[in-house]
Length: 66
Image (cartoon, rainbow, N blue to C red; front, side, top):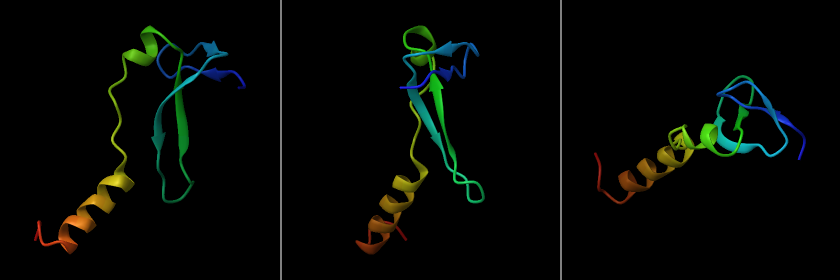
């Protein structure tokens, strides 16, 4: 994999860990990377907004949510 810049310490890393995917309506989004170890572990787990929308749609279809 090509080196990426860590979102926490701003240092390049040759073993980047994907910590988030940003969604954008106008630009398509981007991937956020961190270096393994301390930096990657310091980020909270991200929730996928598209998966949440799909789950809410299924819940409405089944009558669980109004």
